[in-house]
Length: 500
Image: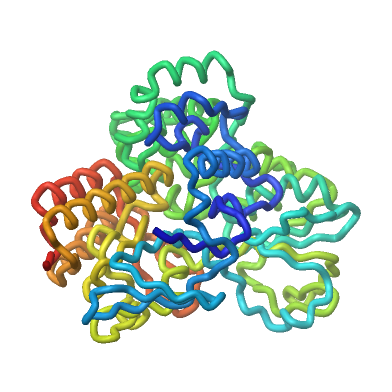
C-alpha cells in the first residue's frame, strides 16, 4: 500500500486548518476512532470540544501507535490517476515525478480540502498580508495592533472572529450571509465523566451512531407541531443552556416542518438580539434562512464579540466587495485600510478535491466530464466507468452531515471488506452499474427534498462556487445509509459489476 499526502505532516483537516480558535464541534470522546479498544482507553482528552492542536496531536499519536508513517509519502500531491483496461490497473502520477500502478485506487481527498478564494478584482495588487483559514501558517501570525479584515461568517469565521478580535488592533468583519450559531459552552474534560465513558464506550457511542447525523443531538422524539409555543420555547432554552448543537434536535420534525423550524429560528434570533448591544448590528446578524439549511455552528462568545469597540461589522450582501486595493479593499465606494486580510471563504466542497486531479476511467472517460452536470456515484463509494476506484466520504454519502470519524471508518471498513471479498473469490474488477448509480442519485435527492436542506444557497449545493451545478450532495440519514451499505455487501455487492 502507498499513501500520498500533500501536506508536510499528517492530520488532513486538522493539519491545514490551524486558524485561531479552530476546534471540533463534536464531543471529543465521540470524535475519535473506535477500531482499537486499547486506543480508546489510552488516550485522554482535555476538553469537551477538542482544539485543533489536540486533535492533530491525537492523529499523530495514532500514526505512531500503529506504525503508519512507513506507508505515507508526505509533501506529495497526486496529479493524475488513469485506469488501463488491458492490465486492469491504475497508474498514479505525482508532482514529485512518482509513477506507481495499483489494482485499487482509493481517493481519501476529503470533502472540505479544496480551498476557495473568490477571484476578487485587484487581488494581486494588495500589498498587505493575506491568509486563507484552510492554509494558516504553522508558525502562526502576529496581528497585534494591526487592522485586520476577515471575509466570511461561516463556521470557520465564527470560531476565528472572537480570537482575531482579541489579537488585532481593529477587526473588520465583511459579512454576506449571517449564520445561525449556538454557544458551545466548552469546558475542561471532567475526569470522572471520561472514566465513565471508557468503562462502557460502546454504550456511549450508540446514540452517536444511531442518530440521523451520526451525532448525539439528544434527539427529542416529540413532534414540534403538536407542542405549544411555551413548550417549544422551554425546550429551546434548555438546549441553549446545555450548549452545543442540541437546539437542532429539539423536535423530531424540525428539519421537515417549516413552522417548527421557524420557531427555532425565531428563538435563536431572539438570543442574538439579547446579546448584541447595538440594535443595528444585531439586525445585520439575524439569519433569514431556515435553521440547518446552512451548516449550524457552535461558538464561544461569537455574538458577544460584536460588542467590542475594536470590531466593525460590514454588510456586503447588498454592496459586495468591489475590489482589493494596494492598502485594503473597497465596499460601496468606501475603502478600508487593512494590514492583513483573512479569507474565511470556505471550500469547493464535496467534489473540488477530486476534480482537481486528472482522473480517467474506462475508454479515457474523465471524472470532470462525467460530473459536469453534478456528481454521480453509487453509495458515494463507487463511480460507473471507473473500476476499482473508491471514494471515501464521496458525494452521495452522509459525509459532512455525519460525525466524520465514524463516517470515514465505516467507509474504510466497507472498502477493506470488499477487497477481501474480491481477493477470496478470484475477482479482479468491481464497478458501479449505471442503473444503480442513477437510482442512488435519485434517492439522495428524494430524501433531501423532504427537508429544508435544499432551500437555501449553501455549499451543500455548491452555491459558493460560480458555475458549479446546484445539486444537494450529501446523503441525509447515517443509520439508514449504513444499513443500505451492509445490504449491498451481504447480497454479493448488488449494484456493482464484478469480473474475474
